[in-house]
Length: 143
Image (cartoon, rainbow, N blue to C red; front, side):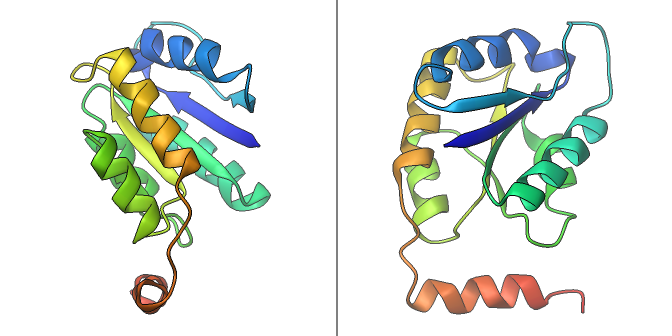
């Protein structure tokens, strides 16, 4: 499975660790940032969501808190980004919300916990049913 990943400087090291962890089992495309120098998270979020929408796949976005990239990503129609703090968040956002982007907090979440959350996120299917109606409501907002 092709997965896009991006972060700002605040989660650069954690992103690098996730890339290494995931590259053996998935096709990982690292969109940046490619150094720990200060950068602006909205640029990376915009780049990633464009690829996720274009290729109809999943993305992993990271910044210091995970909040900024999540807020940015959710401004794009067709993106359902979720800030996850534990494996249950990762499971439920896929199961009930059909999230296509997981957002992680580089300054708050240990890398080992991130690995577990990403594994659960990628392995959990969307349940559909009554939840599909809610996804359609998401998509109709702002029209």
